[in-house]
Image 1 (cartoon, helix red, strand yellow):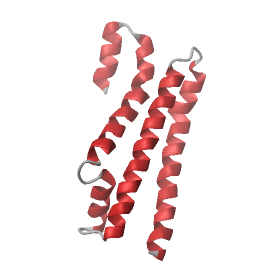
Image 2 (cartoon, rainbow, N blue to C red):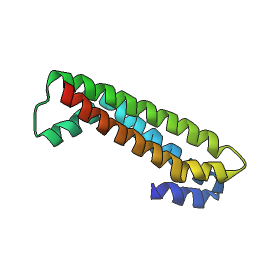
Image 3 (tube, helix red, strand yellow):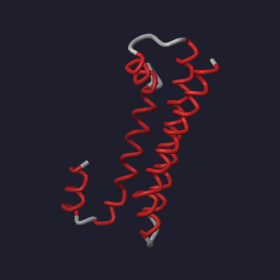
Image 4 (cartoon, rainbow, N blue to C red):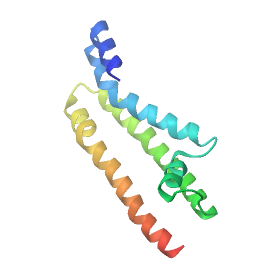
Length: 122
């Protein structure tokens, strides 16, 4: 990503720097999307945490969770891109510098709480 900023400086395109969160979200969305063709990213992480095999119900759950994260990154990319196009960068700064991280934490924390409840009752 540092290469991105070097290109922005070399091209003297100071507005392009606002696309950094868009690129990060798009990159993560691609990782999650392409992982759905094989073993989803969340399934791989769960296998590492559990140390091996997962029950069949967990495989469906981790695939669904991967899709949820994929949509999150797509929406995050769209919001970041829309805010980067605005003249007033205060909204972009607030969203990209704070709110998007709060949303990531809320999704991650909410999923952990749900998983504890889901696994307990499964």
